[in-house]
Image (cartoon, rainbow, N blue to C red; front, side, top):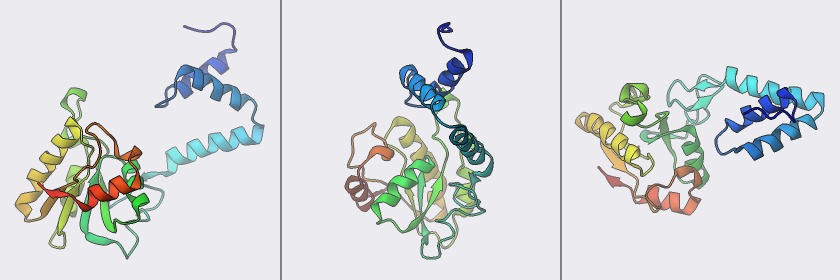
Length: 200
């Protein structure tokens, strides 16, 4: 329902902010009013940053992480151990692992989880790109999807595809509650989960 007490562009801006995850209508209105108090240069810089991020960022050719180059910084780092691949749901999960400063292997981002109820089938994820990476040098694939129904189903599906290739597949030993998310897990808990992972 349109609020007739506000200018239409302000209402439309609020509605756009409200589409962001975790932003309710009241927070969206506060953000919209904040934008109105910004200088023209600040607004242009904000808009330019949105457009630049949307147009210049794409998936890394190797791990499918988000990057503005051909390879992301992790894949282009010669010090990383490419014999270990940690499979995660989203780029945000890589950030969580990197905060531990303990994991030195490589990653692979699925960009989602298998969820038939949401019409997300295996072919809509970056699974074939993962299988193309598994070779004679690959020693281990760590399934680091969240401990949810979808996360478990995805981990089991991928492990069944990889195990016949003679590669060890492990699952994180989560020291976190079922239904939790990697993004909000503290560094110590995440490191312990990584350290105590189990083969599946």
